Image 1 (cartoon, rainbow, N blue to C red):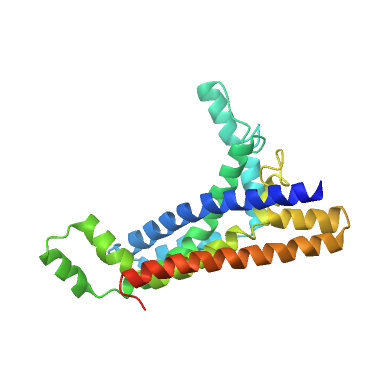
Image 2: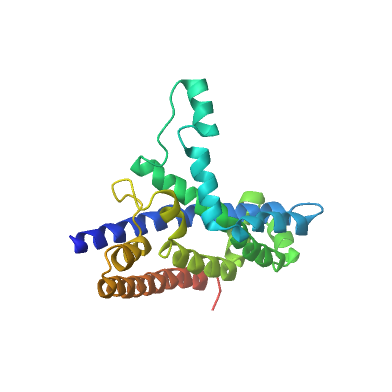
Amino acid sequence: MASSRVWAAFWVSYKFMLGFIPLVLVASICLALIVQHLPKWKSLFAVAFFLPYLASGVVSSLVVKGVLSYSGPLNTFLRATFGNSPDWLGTPTLAMIVIVAMVVWKMAGYYALIFLSGLQGIPTEIYEAAAIDGAGPWRAFWQVTLPMLYPAFYTVLILAVGIALSIFTEPYALTHGGPEMATQTWQLEIYYQAFDQFRSGYGATVALLNAVVTLITILIIRRVVEAWGHKNGWN
């Protein structure tokens, strides 16, 4: 039984990672581009986007739980408008979507600051040369901006993988791993084995396994990203 729970937590963690990483990368790059092109008050907006990262995960989770509850403002509005409202935290797929969206909201501003520093380090002469060659904004983004953001992209991706495979606060506060273990991440399983079942040895074993798998995952992703970097002239 315990081994089946560990396998379930393994797949849940990877499902979370596959949903979280693409969304947070897109969101953080978009935020960085927005701040970069603001005519003024860049620092103010950068700090504003960073604030969710400083917010307590427990407090944020409780606020979200209250908003998404049956009698919360969102479900009340949906029932008044459409006659029905979903069980956000009681449906496996919706519960995972809520947690992914919440962690993306929390981390996107922090990662945007890393991308912003990368954008500010790109020489304007490169864009001028690309414009002379006939590159429009979209082509310049894919062929100039994104390759030049490789160091920032590398850093953010590694950090995001670490977050994705160590998430605990949000699923614990929102769903306690439910419904039907749909949000039972590895960290929640470690907590369950060590502190609910008082199997500290088994919990430590799961924690060690989690660390090994996280390391292997980071090494694989690192190789892939480095190959992309070498292709674009980064050594």
